[in-house]
Image 1 (cartoon, one colour):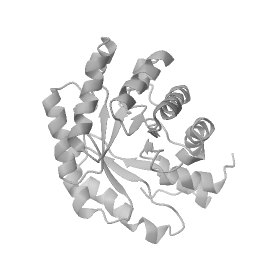
Image 2: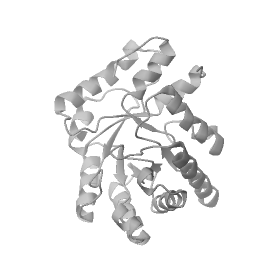
Image 3: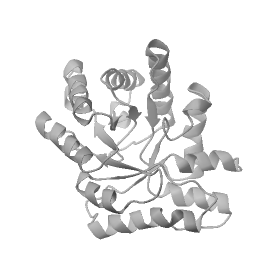
Image 4: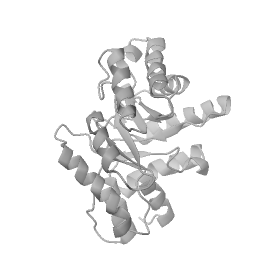
Amino acid sequence: MFYPPEHLKTCLSCIDLTSLQATDTDARILAMVQKVNAFPQHFPDMPLPAAICVYPSFTGILHKSLTAKGVRIAVTGAGFPASQTFLPVKIQECRMAVEQGADEVDIVLSLNYFLSGDYARAGEEIFRIKEAIGPAHLKVIIESGTLAKPQAIAQASRIAMEAGADFIKTSTGKSEPAATLQAATVMCGEILSYYQKTGKKTGFKPAGGILSPEDAMGYYAIVAEILGPEWLNPSLFRIGASRLANNLLSALQHHAIEYF
């Protein structure tokens, strides 16, 4: 299927290039950073991804080695992916990541509190973490596939935004289903309602299982339709992915590319 190149390039510019494997090593993360640094030399007409997203223990490597202009350092935190640890540990982990150079922190809404109906405590955790990391961006993952019902997805989205989330994100990618177009529609609708009520623009990040240009363009279309073109930029739209970047490059260059 044909997609306008400018739309595909927008999706490429909004990718959080992600490596969140138990087998990640310093060498593996450094190799990914080096590819990002060299990307403009190989693809001078293509935008760089928005960020590199890794586990917090690799923050220092990114901070020392990432030279690609405008690419942000994003890390997971707060007991990712289960969020089942002590709040002081969550706060300290996120604070340490920012102190070591992280620009953004992705955390998971505490589902143990949310599913128990303790919405106040779930929101309080997000508020405390956001308070601890200051101006760094906070992305809150609601694990929409686990919540499943639209009403629960909407409630979790509202809790995250009201507690200070800069982005709301569908999934960790560690459980199934991950991102879905239905969840994206609900979440973007809540972002619009929150913006109309408060004037604050919250970003949206689908993540998990987004592999093809067709997948990416589905989320692009939902954001464009519900939130409008002003959301279609890396400051308000991200896509969490690892293999998507190569597939977008392949579609734009009209031949198979395995760069990242």
